[in-house]
Length: 329
Image 1 (cartoon, rainbow, N blue to C red):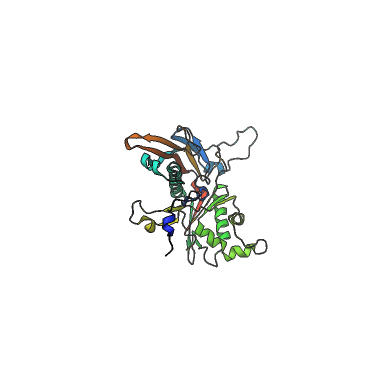
Image 2 (tube, rainbow, N blue to C red):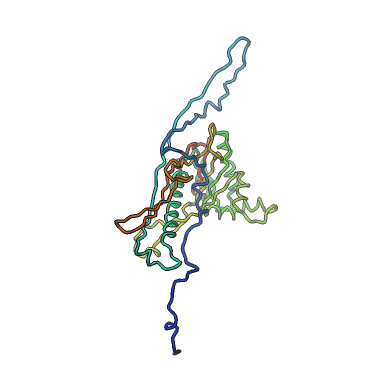
């Protein structure tokens, strides 16, 4: 046996130039990019909604000499938003901070952790508000065979034609509202099947390299924006025994799609599938009603890093949206 041994000449220490942490990229999350953000000074308020029927009805009539013109008008409605406040914190004990080794930094890591917590939570709120049945003017459901009314052949079927399915749904929205959907949200599992759809590959075989990207799908579906969110969530409860091995990881967006007309920026006299009302009037809040605070918690000899967001992701014109459930098997 060699003398001295390896363990007697070297004591393992943490590397200072690298570490391993699963911090998702902010680009995986889309909740702050699909609907325009409406900055609001108050946590709750009213907004006006013009009823649609009067704006599509022809009221003009032939006018005879010395007679009044035909008259009419429209009806107004109101709705409300409420920017609920969501928060999470991480306490950093003085003793733990004093004993941390490089490259650990409890303050840096705590800030990254609470930020990621808020991104995941906000994404879940967006999914609950947007990605579901009985929310939008049109619900379509994918089936394995024999589609009937309000159904379509799932995109993993070689006989499916996703382009016709989506463009037909766009026309139906325009038929009812006068506005063509311009935005889509496509789950990663759905994108995979679209990228390998025989119908789509046949359409592009003479003009493309056979690589079906999100931009190409936007062009085929004739929409301005396509979002493919890769946000991942662990749905197991903290404290589960052998938590890492028992954790349940999956994409937050299931095997579904959404399509709708989204006004490029908040404005009056224009519909939009939804808006995000962000309470920027909250002291120190950013563009999404967000802020990160650091405060001293002397009774537990710790510093607290706290993240907070105040917003309401709200559907404001359900008739300009379409939800595609079970788009793939």
